Image 1: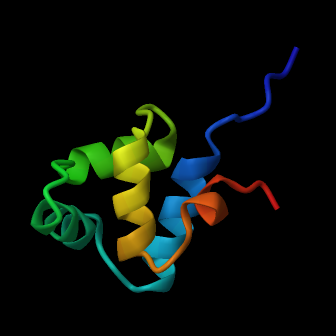
Image 2 (image 1 turned 90 degrees about the horizontal axis):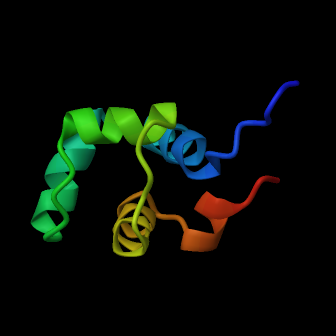
Length: 76
């Protein structure tokens, strides 16, 4: 039985980051300036679905990537 991929945020973060031509290191640095400590490896884990995102991290990611938190959560 196939289980659908339930990590919506990771794919959305990656898409938004790439659209802004930003590396994982650059995103991690911007998060650090906003007092959110996620290193490059953490960004990679979020994007590949092996790490969950806390609500305060989602808010910071959305702000940096010029998205709303809801847009990073939407499947459409």
